[in-house]
Length: 151
Image (cartoon, rainbow, N blue to C red; front, side, top):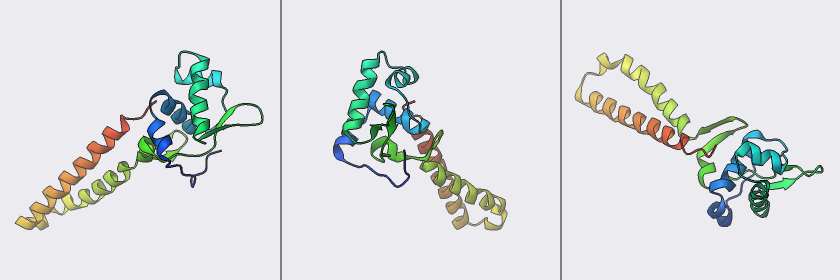
């Protein structure tokens, strides 16, 4: 099954892990349980069972997926390359890494705004504007990355 410490950053996996192959792998990582090729085909929305098998074979060649004793496919290794490296979590709880930074900046901004009357000098205003800009950029990046999820 999936281990949080597993990592695959091989160039071939990064170059080839896109499109339907990425969707199949993303589904398997999020579900984190054994599935047959037919179940994967239906759940991911692929047009045929042979197409699912093709993408599963690619994932097996990368060492990311293997079959269990019942012939079902399971995640063997968690890849952190490409798009997958931008997300943290496990199961259905996957969020962009930027979410942590955006939430932290927002958390620091709220008390800063509360004490704004104490900092009504030019330097305080410049720091406030800079903090607001950084917080907005982080939230925009978080939303942009969130929309890149394959499924």
